[in-house]
Image (tube, rainbow, N blue to C red; front, side):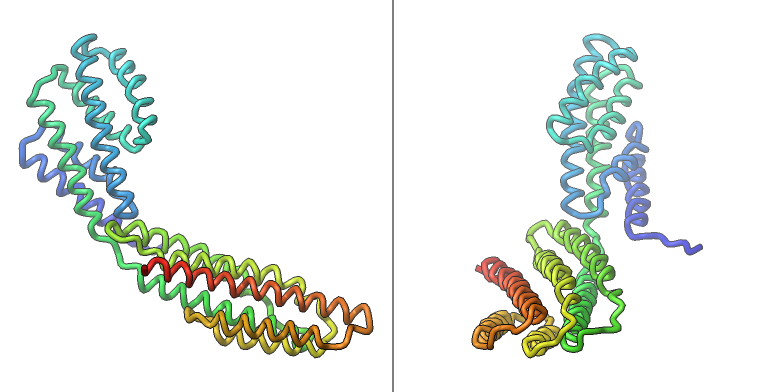
Length: 322
């Protein structure tokens, strides 16, 4: 059994230690709570960390205000604490700051434990909050660079697309194939993992919205859906006709051109040329030939949409540059 310490575990441990050291060094009461706040505020991404930290600070202030008033008016009793929670939790939920409930509860319990409101106690609690949240934000400044992993997903997905298109062209050409199709479920998993990582990468950029990888993987996901729709139609073509060779050649060329480069206009022109050629050919003589041609026309239609999906990605990228 392997034992591995992740970067987030390391950040949490170091951050908790720093928070306690600073709070204890300042002789604050309940200094251990600074570590709890730090642990709760360390998130997977920088944006999430900022959002969670803001929610915890605001909710703590709201909790201190409500509890300070009610404790002084009603008294430091268990039922007062219950009443505070009944009022406090719905307010925080309404403000969509649910993350702050646990942290605020710790601060409210501090006030209850002391049993007396004072400026010194309020200042003590504010410092604990600032130290805990501040250390968490400092720890979250470091996030591992995901560019290399994203490039790896990019490359693997393109290789799978090449294989799938190539094998479809082989089946169209010969009416049979020894392909086992393992790239299909593998591509599904790769696309999901790549999208998740790309989304996390977006949330790790605060001053810029770097979404090029995410849109690229979304584009490939939509193209993959088209390839999945094509497969039943390709598998139904057992009789080879001259048009099958033409479409097979096209798919083979498309397979060799899977890349980030935009060759969409060239391939769209190829499709228009093939359609024009099909229309000039003699009408099918048998029902089987008619069904084959119908399937090939549908395949061309789907491949055209496959190309348009990529074209839309390029248009999106161009607009982002303006």
